[in-house]
Amino acid sequence: MNRILRFCSSRLSLSIVPLISVQITHTVRPEPLLVIEYRKANPQSQEFSGLAMVAQRLDGKACAAEVEEELLLRIAACKEKGIKPHLAVVIVGDDPASHVYVGSKVRACERLGIQSTHIELAADSTEEQVRDAILSLNEQAGLHGILVQSPLPNHMNEEALTDLIDPVKDVDGFHPQNLGRLVQGRLDGMLPCTPSGVMRMLSWAGIETEGKTAVILGRSRIVGMPQSLLLGAKGVDSTVTVAHSRTQNTAELCASADIVIAAVGRPEMVTADWIKDGAVVVDVGINRVDDTSRERGWRLAGDVHPDVANKASWLSPVPGGVGPMTIAMLMENTVRAAEQSYIA
Image 1: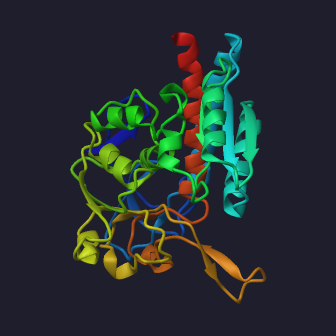
Image 2 (image 1 turned 120 degrees about the vertical axis):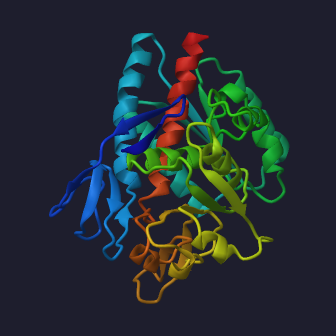
């Protein structure tokens, strides 16, 4: 019997399904990178039979599409009660990547029928101006979610500004009150979008976490630290190590891990010799790398080298892995905030 974890943002539950032996000769969801033989527990989980390892694609786009399908039903229920979920995004400055990210969030709102407000402030705006914008949004009764796009200009205290957001509207999940709930093992606050998106992908793929060793590369409050709390939570039950810039023998730590989550912002740092056969690898990084062979002169690369696919059992692509899930979980937090507004 193989125990498969089902993870939801508001609850954890376990279901038991039997293993059956099958021969795979065609594409199944999640889509394999190559045809391989494996023992199968359900359409999304795999246990390899000892052949040469070729990573399955941990497809964030497909998983995010399922999340959005579920959200459409919840949004319809909100509207029946006279509530239209509403997200406000504050962006300061002209950082091109930030504007691309905000555009993706606005388009997701349009797909789902979530109202969106886009507030742009000049790069030379004062911290007080941003502060006033946040406090004004806090007071708007029909507004359910507030997001301040990172990074902010260097002259601003980003953490102090995001701390001003009303915790019930903190759809990024970074407010100390929401992070504090997570430290307590509670999932009733807003969960940080990228870590909760990673957990949803692992559940979607039927990847077992109980008793598994997990190494998280990076200790940021945005990804690394909340990710460690979610993986170590009751019901998930992984044994978690957080590695950072002062960690000794990082490669050796990763080579012993069942699950590796890379979130350091260093292109292709994690190489195949860091990964043991059959490990699950989630690549949170997205980096722009010079590439003269491309017409635009650059390409996107993750924190994980592509050769890791020859050893891992699962690998999230870049792009198309964690990125779509981060946006999907932002949408879910916004809908959750709207639901809580009428429950309250």
